[in-house]
Image (cartoon, rainbow over all chains, first blue to last red; front, side, top):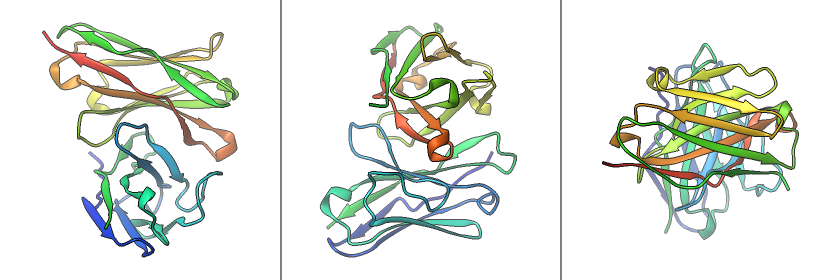
Length: 108
Length: 120
Protein backbone atom coordinates (compact mmCIF):
# COMPACT_ATOMS: atom_id res chain seq x y z
CA UNK A 1 0.00 0.00 0.00
CA UNK A 2 1.08 3.59 -0.62
CA UNK A 3 2.99 5.43 2.10
CA UNK A 4 4.07 8.98 2.83
CA UNK A 5 7.16 9.38 4.99
CA UNK A 6 7.72 12.27 7.41
CA UNK A 7 10.40 12.79 10.07
CA UNK A 8 8.96 12.06 13.53
CA UNK A 9 10.18 15.32 15.00
CA UNK A 10 11.67 18.71 14.18
CA UNK A 11 12.92 21.21 16.73
CA UNK A 12 13.67 24.90 16.20
CA UNK A 13 14.13 28.00 18.30
CA UNK A 14 11.65 30.89 18.06
CA UNK A 15 12.30 33.07 15.02
CA UNK A 16 14.12 30.34 13.11
CA UNK A 17 12.86 28.47 10.05
CA UNK A 18 11.34 25.02 10.35
CA UNK A 19 11.23 22.67 7.39
CA UNK A 20 9.14 19.50 7.45
CA UNK A 21 9.46 17.05 4.60
CA UNK A 22 7.08 14.44 3.22
CA UNK A 23 8.24 11.83 0.72
CA UNK A 24 6.20 9.56 -1.52
CA UNK A 25 6.57 7.96 -4.92
CA UNK A 26 3.40 9.51 -6.34
CA UNK A 27 4.11 13.07 -5.24
CA UNK A 28 5.37 14.12 -8.68
CA UNK A 29 1.86 13.31 -9.95
CA UNK A 30 -0.36 14.12 -6.98
CA UNK A 31 -0.77 17.29 -4.95
CA UNK A 32 0.05 17.35 -1.27
CA UNK A 33 -1.90 18.95 1.55
CA UNK A 34 -0.60 19.94 4.97
CA UNK A 35 -2.50 20.03 8.25
CA UNK A 36 -1.62 21.40 11.65
CA UNK A 37 -3.04 19.61 14.67
CA UNK A 38 -2.76 20.79 18.26
CA UNK A 39 -3.55 18.50 21.20
CA UNK A 40 -7.24 17.77 21.58
CA UNK A 41 -8.17 19.69 18.44
CA UNK A 42 -9.23 18.83 14.92
CA UNK A 43 -6.67 19.28 12.14
CA UNK A 44 -6.41 22.65 10.38
CA UNK A 45 -5.49 22.93 6.70
CA UNK A 46 -2.40 25.14 6.32
CA UNK A 47 -1.26 24.38 2.75
CA UNK A 48 -3.14 22.88 -0.19
CA UNK A 49 -2.09 21.81 -3.68
CA UNK A 50 1.58 21.77 -2.64
CA UNK A 51 2.00 25.50 -2.13
CA UNK A 52 -1.27 27.40 -1.80
CA UNK A 53 -2.26 28.93 1.50
CA UNK A 54 -5.88 29.12 2.68
CA UNK A 55 -7.19 32.45 3.81
CA UNK A 56 -6.49 33.10 7.46
CA UNK A 57 -3.26 31.09 7.52
CA UNK A 58 -0.24 33.30 8.34
CA UNK A 59 2.18 34.09 5.52
CA UNK A 60 5.02 32.40 7.42
CA UNK A 61 3.56 29.07 6.28
CA UNK A 62 4.63 28.02 2.79
CA UNK A 63 4.91 24.83 0.77
CA UNK A 64 7.07 23.57 -2.06
CA UNK A 65 7.55 20.46 -4.13
CA UNK A 66 10.55 18.82 -5.74
CA UNK A 67 10.33 15.37 -7.25
CA UNK A 68 9.13 12.83 -4.71
CA UNK A 69 9.39 15.24 -1.77
CA UNK A 70 7.19 18.08 -0.62
CA UNK A 71 8.23 20.50 2.09
CA UNK A 72 6.30 22.61 4.56
CA UNK A 73 8.32 25.66 5.60
CA UNK A 74 7.48 27.82 8.60
CA UNK A 75 9.51 31.01 8.59
CA UNK A 76 9.99 32.94 11.81
CA UNK A 77 8.55 30.14 13.95
CA UNK A 78 6.44 31.24 16.90
CA UNK A 79 5.61 29.36 20.07
CA UNK A 80 2.02 28.94 18.87
CA UNK A 81 3.26 26.90 15.89
CA UNK A 82 4.19 24.01 18.17
CA UNK A 83 1.95 21.18 16.96
CA UNK A 84 1.83 17.98 14.95
CA UNK A 85 1.94 18.43 11.19
CA UNK A 86 0.59 15.87 8.72
CA UNK A 87 0.87 15.67 4.95
CA UNK A 88 -1.87 14.04 2.90
CA UNK A 89 -1.87 12.95 -0.71
CA UNK A 90 -3.17 10.31 -3.07
CA UNK A 91 -1.60 7.28 -4.70
CA UNK A 92 -0.75 7.36 -8.41
CA UNK A 93 -4.27 6.32 -9.38
CA UNK A 94 -5.76 9.16 -7.35
CA UNK A 95 -8.28 6.87 -5.69
CA UNK A 96 -6.62 6.08 -2.38
CA UNK A 97 -5.58 8.85 -0.04
CA UNK A 98 -3.11 8.53 2.80
CA UNK A 99 -1.58 10.59 5.56
CA UNK A 100 2.05 10.75 6.49
CA UNK A 101 3.05 9.59 9.95
CA UNK A 102 3.07 13.13 11.30
CA UNK A 103 5.89 15.38 12.51
CA UNK A 104 5.95 16.89 15.96
CA UNK A 105 7.28 20.43 15.77
CA UNK A 106 8.85 21.55 19.02
CA UNK A 107 9.63 25.22 19.57
CA UNK A 108 12.56 25.32 21.97
CA UNK B 1 -20.02 30.53 9.35
CA UNK B 2 -18.97 27.39 7.54
CA UNK B 3 -18.99 24.41 9.84
CA UNK B 4 -19.45 20.69 10.24
CA UNK B 5 -21.13 19.46 13.41
CA UNK B 6 -20.71 15.79 14.27
CA UNK B 7 -22.85 13.53 16.43
CA UNK B 8 -21.94 12.75 20.00
CA UNK B 9 -19.69 10.09 21.55
CA UNK B 10 -20.55 6.43 21.14
CA UNK B 11 -19.80 3.33 23.19
CA UNK B 12 -20.27 0.09 21.30
CA UNK B 13 -19.81 -3.62 21.90
CA UNK B 14 -17.44 -5.64 19.69
CA UNK B 15 -19.16 -7.01 16.62
CA UNK B 16 -21.76 -4.25 16.44
CA UNK B 17 -21.94 -1.19 14.14
CA UNK B 18 -21.70 2.55 14.63
CA UNK B 19 -23.06 5.34 12.45
CA UNK B 20 -21.58 8.82 12.86
CA UNK B 21 -23.23 11.88 11.36
CA UNK B 22 -21.72 15.12 10.09
CA UNK B 23 -24.08 18.06 9.46
CA UNK B 24 -22.90 20.87 7.20
CA UNK B 25 -23.90 24.52 7.31
CA UNK B 26 -22.69 27.81 5.88
CA UNK B 27 -21.56 26.43 2.50
CA UNK B 28 -23.00 24.62 -0.49
CA UNK B 29 -23.04 21.02 0.68
CA UNK B 30 -24.08 19.68 -2.70
CA UNK B 31 -20.92 21.13 -4.28
CA UNK B 32 -18.53 19.50 -1.86
CA UNK B 33 -16.82 16.25 -1.02
CA UNK B 34 -16.59 14.81 2.48
CA UNK B 35 -13.82 12.62 3.78
CA UNK B 36 -13.73 10.59 6.98
CA UNK B 37 -10.55 10.25 8.98
CA UNK B 38 -9.87 8.60 12.32
CA UNK B 39 -7.20 8.95 14.97
CA UNK B 40 -6.53 6.52 17.78
CA UNK B 41 -5.13 8.01 20.96
CA UNK B 42 -1.57 9.19 20.34
CA UNK B 43 -1.56 7.83 16.79
CA UNK B 44 -1.47 9.25 13.27
CA UNK B 45 -4.42 10.38 11.21
CA UNK B 46 -5.86 7.50 9.17
CA UNK B 47 -7.92 8.02 6.01
CA UNK B 48 -11.12 5.98 5.86
CA UNK B 49 -12.78 7.17 2.67
CA UNK B 50 -14.74 9.93 1.00
CA UNK B 51 -17.92 10.77 -0.86
CA UNK B 52 -18.55 13.30 -3.61
CA UNK B 53 -21.80 14.75 -2.35
CA UNK B 54 -23.39 15.69 -5.66
CA UNK B 55 -22.86 12.35 -7.40
CA UNK B 56 -22.77 10.10 -4.35
CA UNK B 57 -19.58 8.46 -5.64
CA UNK B 58 -17.46 6.95 -2.89
CA UNK B 59 -13.91 5.76 -2.40
CA UNK B 60 -12.72 3.71 0.56
CA UNK B 61 -9.33 2.77 1.95
CA UNK B 62 -8.68 -0.88 1.22
CA UNK B 63 -8.34 -1.57 4.95
CA UNK B 64 -11.97 -0.57 5.54
CA UNK B 65 -13.47 -1.63 2.21
CA UNK B 66 -15.49 -4.51 3.63
CA UNK B 67 -16.76 -2.74 6.75
CA UNK B 68 -17.44 0.92 5.96
CA UNK B 69 -20.27 2.71 4.19
CA UNK B 70 -20.25 6.47 3.60
CA UNK B 71 -23.53 8.08 2.56
CA UNK B 72 -25.11 11.50 2.41
CA UNK B 73 -28.53 13.06 2.69
CA UNK B 74 -28.65 16.22 0.60
CA UNK B 75 -32.03 17.22 2.01
CA UNK B 76 -30.48 17.66 5.47
CA UNK B 77 -26.90 18.50 4.37
CA UNK B 78 -25.62 15.56 6.37
CA UNK B 79 -22.95 12.97 5.66
CA UNK B 80 -22.74 9.64 7.45
CA UNK B 81 -20.05 7.06 8.11
CA UNK B 82 -21.11 3.59 9.23
CA UNK B 83 -18.50 1.10 10.41
CA UNK B 84 -19.53 -2.48 11.07
CA UNK B 85 -18.02 -5.52 12.82
CA UNK B 86 -16.42 -3.25 15.36
CA UNK B 87 -13.37 -4.38 17.31
CA UNK B 88 -11.35 -2.79 20.07
CA UNK B 89 -8.83 -1.44 17.55
CA UNK B 90 -11.59 0.77 16.11
CA UNK B 91 -11.59 2.86 19.28
CA UNK B 92 -10.66 6.32 18.04
CA UNK B 93 -11.80 9.86 17.35
CA UNK B 94 -13.56 9.99 13.98
CA UNK B 95 -13.46 13.24 11.98
CA UNK B 96 -15.32 14.39 8.91
CA UNK B 97 -13.88 17.10 6.66
CA UNK B 98 -15.35 18.92 3.67
CA UNK B 99 -13.62 19.97 0.47
CA UNK B 100 -15.00 22.87 -1.52
CA UNK B 101 -14.56 24.20 -5.03
CA UNK B 102 -13.60 27.59 -3.56
CA UNK B 103 -10.34 26.13 -2.24
CA UNK B 104 -9.81 23.85 -5.20
CA UNK B 105 -11.22 20.80 -3.46
CA UNK B 106 -9.01 21.00 -0.40
CA UNK B 107 -10.46 19.68 2.87
CA UNK B 108 -10.55 22.97 4.74
CA UNK B 109 -13.59 22.50 6.97
CA UNK B 110 -13.36 19.92 9.74
CA UNK B 111 -15.86 18.62 12.25
CA UNK B 112 -15.11 18.60 15.96
CA UNK B 113 -14.58 14.84 16.06
CA UNK B 114 -16.63 11.99 17.51
CA UNK B 115 -15.16 9.61 20.06
CA UNK B 116 -16.08 6.00 19.38
CA UNK B 117 -15.20 3.50 22.09
CA UNK B 118 -15.45 -0.22 21.42
CA UNK B 119 -15.47 -2.23 24.62
CA UNK B 120 -17.12 -5.33 25.97
